[in-house]
View 1 (cartoon, each protein chain N blue to C red):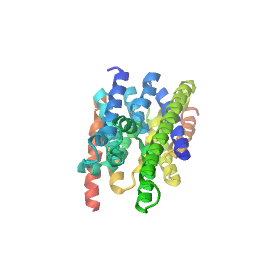
View 2 (view 1 turned 90 degrees about the vertical axis):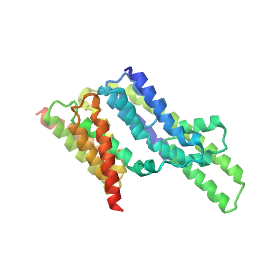
View 3 (view 1 turned 180 degrees about the vertical axis):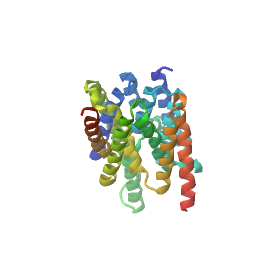
View 4 (view 1 turned 30 degrees about the horizontal axis):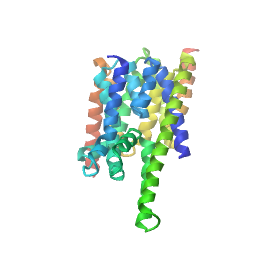
Length: 226
Length: 105
């Protein structure tokens, strides 16, 4: 858990600084934390709002980035079946990459323990629920505090530092780490080329075209890989 | 549109993603198309946003070139370390060095 907390803290600090230097009102940039609550989507939203993109482009981009949360939601649904509605609503709100990883690992151990016949199955499942919720709340608190710290620090730093470039660099890092297959590399490259070509399109509508083009290339390439 | 409203709308959309299949219960599986597209969505979307950020609002070919080199340095750093944070740690100093070299000499 501790490495996740440290990583989330650093990440939120960078997101907070980049939000503060994006031209978006500080409170609006910080508000992406408790509402969107997903680093990459927050960064993209702040960047797009700051560059004058149409609201539909901002929301569609956030949806595209956060679509993976539907997959997480599907994976957690079977573990959370039978929990009270308020509990599932809260647990779903706190669902993000690190909490998903921490929670899934703990639910997996609970299931292994039950399969091996060791311990109290219901008790272990309750402990797994508590582990998920406790960890997710801790991650959420660290995220929002570090985000505020970054937002406070950001405007005090000199313009010559080019901090607005932190966002593209950060996203580049995520692309390199996540593009693990030739299909995803091809898709990312195609999206980048179309995005640059479409920069002249008003309200950054070219961004949606570039995402669609990138996904089409990645899907086609993945079919050919098989 | 008011930026606060845009952020709130994006927040509601994000929460809908998180809650979707949890609210429907475990009887409903993840849609097949989403399963196929899911591994590509984040790298593709991030690449599109990042590429725009490298070129947009620079106003000078020299700055675009400096940013492109910084991105190349970032890619190498992430490949070598396996950590995405290395992109900022290596790319920003590269940009500062090029900035000093190109614009302050």
